[in-house]
Image (cartoon, rainbow, N blue to C red; front, side):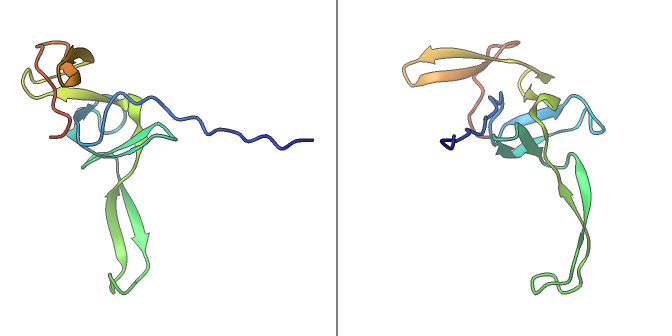
Length: 117
């Protein structure tokens, strides 16, 4: 039998690293923050100051005391929605072709959404 190579599926995520988003479901619903990291293979995002978990760390050279550290954990990308700071609401993204290429646009107010905040 020939060995088959399985491809790991990647999710098509609607937000990018650096986008300002609002958490729309879960224990942190209503919180806003920037996306710190995007994990494409699992379809998850890490939002600053949202989905905080406690991590018990052993003493190390960088942290001689050890102890309990709070950090952000990944959440499903479907739990966040892009937040437009111009119209102050969550929005979907529309795309428009310009001379510079494809540009993301807010569905509500029609303002160009920057790639990085």
